[in-house]
Image 1 (cartoon, helix red, strand yellow):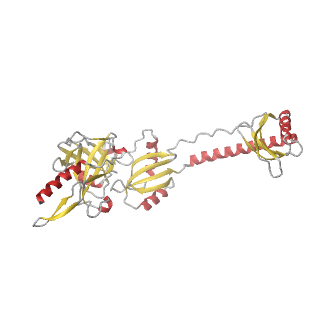
Image 2 (cartoon, rainbow, N blue to C red; image 1 turned 180 degrees about the vertical axis):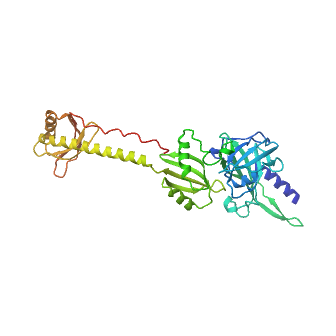
Image 3 (cartoon, helix red, strand yellow; image 1 turned 90 degrees about the vertical axis):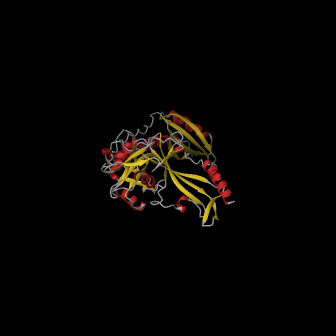
Length: 409
């Protein structure tokens, strides 16, 4: 009976394994996998963003005080991988490459390079992996590259339900049919420069003329010691989103350090939850430079000066219009329009407005005068209209603002 249960359970688990949940995010669909059980090409130099995958590929760092956050993978994965780790800040490498053998340290299946989970360094955490008590689970990792040249690390969390039976010399856990499922967690390691000597923080920020590279070169000198810029992207307006790595302090401590420079306005800072490694994502704006502030102040002063001049010109026109008012007509204000200005007028007699229009044009001060809107009478039963007056001499338009000095914003 027990043998029969084991046969049924094994077959059921095999079927369940084929039903892997299709929860692949759009961002991960550009993964380049191999065919069948062939190994994918993962050769390249990358910035490490996963401690578990790093341990399985490169092993624990020989010098824990160095920033071993860059890794080079070389060789034919069909046989073995040569792994070299680099100090992010100095570019120096480990004395000799670490050799990872197929069949011993990893396997290849379904087009991915497959590795076990390093439970000795990263014990299974039911709360972090959202696995309820009473449910069996195991973790593994699948590795490949994407079309952007990044290394993609997929963490596989397989779960199933089981029951225990007495086998005479102990208990055995029997998987329940049709209860297996697999979830995935994803991370991507950005490609780094191939030349290890160019891996220091300053040298790796090549200026290719894009806004991102300009912003990166502006941001890098403002970062606290031992904090490295991994990537930066624009998120609209003057905002940037940067992934930072290193340090090991808390979010408030890093935010205070970033704000201390006086050149950054931090809008949001949080831990990158997509990777177990200490990485932060900060959304920020660059504070205006002294030159930018001076240019903006000059623009604002010019705008205010011109607005006051236009206001004075229109006010003078309104005063010259007053003698044309029929007896009993009043105005409650005016506002500027593109072609002239609108004057709100009140009078009990509708004919008084037509008389004003005729007088205004006859004065030579205005090229045209037209009623543009009528409003409901006021409590004193005065008719209310808005008259558009176009001066014979146009009011000077507002000057176009001068372009500001180019910035990384």
